[in-house]
Image (cartoon, one colour):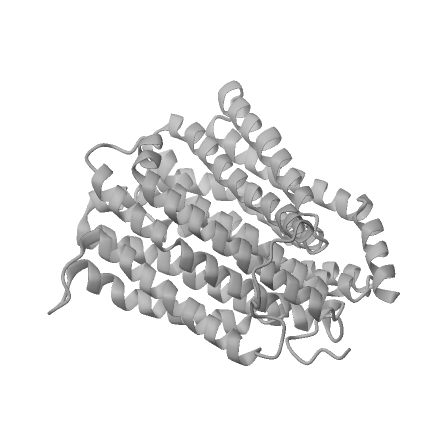
Length: 460
């Protein structure tokens, strides 16, 4: 069967495919992150510290929603990629039907439950009483926006499964532009548009997400009307549901572990005062920015791995890993060198206080060289995820965060002369452990045996 739609990643230049796949994802992530920072600036300058506090206390819940969206839809992307590589259109249709059916169920459950229990969740997080009403209203609107977040992630995952990352980028650009215009407009009001304060920011996000979902749905419906990329029936067949959950749930848990790990580390940093907390907050943003190129390559590696496993072209997996690492090295190496040579200058971009700059500079000098581990473990994890072994990458994260980073950071900061620098060292050591464990499984894990069985099935 000849595949007439999507992008076949099982033939042609591997580095070219990786770059073409990863670049739109990277641009989309940068746009989303950049606008998140701009949105905070709007809220802070137009509404004040109470509004910023209301957004801040809601943020952990929002991160959990994003983790649920990306974790569940990652399974869709990986499974469609493998079926696409095998040119198994009935299988693709079954995955699409199940993904939409599961998605609608999750949307209804989370939205209804989230709106009903918003106030209780915020109280559980220790939200101060003076901002609780403001935060509750904002969080309820955010919960209402969960449907848009999930559906936009699902549509993008379906398209990524067939090798298309450019169209999802266009939807992100459209959504970001709409949000940028509506945010200040709905917050302060203009003419007949009433001033909606913080709720205006939430409503702007709701409308902007809709501008990504509706065109995305229409595009997929018309562009692929004869292809198995649109839902055609409600399906809840047990084996397929379990398969989606087996891949998606560990990814969700892995992202929640990262959030939990951050919460523990910042609690240790808080012992050293406000300057240390501020420095770590800024340094964490730098970590996120550095990781973005590697994460984009990881998603490209996952899709290519899944397609090539589906096609039975196992010999390309080693090449995918090699070129993924090579593509990662230049950007991350430059950033690492800058962190070692110019840490104070980097910190001054974000803050002017001398004590914060010095503390952050110490972080960058210690952690900066550790960024080089990103070049390897994100690619290695991408291979493992592409093989559908997300339970393994979840376990790797658990070992790194819960068994290494958190206890080691606590011990070194309390019981050694390193103090605060002990926390930074623990972070680097956890990067190294992640890399080592990922490579060990990549080279010696049983996933290769499963791949060969899958390849045999394709050939027959």
